[in-house]
Image 1: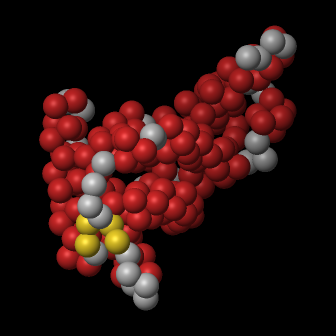
Image 2: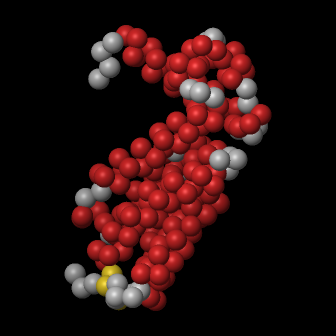
Length: 195
């Protein structure tokens, strides 16, 4: 808990700067957004902005770190009982829905390649652990495992970006559909472990 009023004020300023940046990213590319514009909208001076960030790209990287940290916290909270494909799908779909707007802006920004690479690097070990808990991966099938993980995870991203609605019932339906599809894909390559 932040006890120092200065820390709380700095935290509020950081949140405000990020909110303004997200709103500006809805209509313009990152490189078109100026620090002076952010400062004017936040009603702060440039020195305050530079106390927090080097430039707008540093700000966007911090926004990316926020999403990645929240995702890591979600992955760390998943218990072995929740590792069934449908449960994992639901958790991720709710996460994606909760962070829909910032994720969409970050995935479609000019930094999207870097962000998606970092996102994949964070997700792949989790997916691999889940797959290894559920399937027998024969020796020499590492390439197939990696391809299957990339195929399934990119399908989740695409499906979420194009089709997901905000209704909890719909999220559950879509999560179940994705879980069944990913299991069907994996079962073509690997044998499911007995429970």
